[in-house]
Length: 208
Image (cartoon, rainbow, N blue to C red; front, side, top):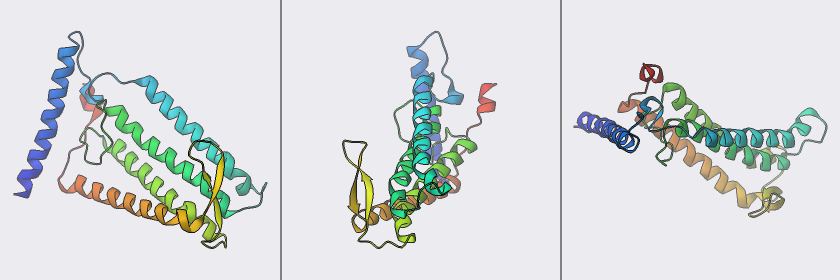
């Protein structure tokens, strides 16, 4: 019974992909849908903008961290909270890139999407795992440096790039809870991917 449900799920996904292809071809009679890279043409400009923003955000975080790592400034675990949080955000945005590369249907990335190649799938898993690790370490860096939960850390304001302070006991529990939930979804997604099983897409074969 379980195998039949898995087969039906894969069949439904393939039918949906074929239906989207037919819709695209009916709207664009002069061209064919590029099934190997998703449905319809890629919005390369948006992908480049998103990729550039992720790169600049990562460099900005490194700019904040590097003085303490190179000895130019005294190391302070509390100061790591903001750049680690910002790096976690960049990891989330970077994880969207492979899904935006293969789809243009407005959906969010999922680990069971059969449009992914093995490389894109493990890239998504790696970026989300990096995000969960950074979220867990952001408040823990202050504790590793000898501070207690009553210490204050720098957090970004809601409507400004400037930072304010908040007690660690207030921000640490939501961060750790979010990290635990994220790793739960990662493990569950990988488990579902390989126990159904859901086939990966070969872009090299689709080009032929």
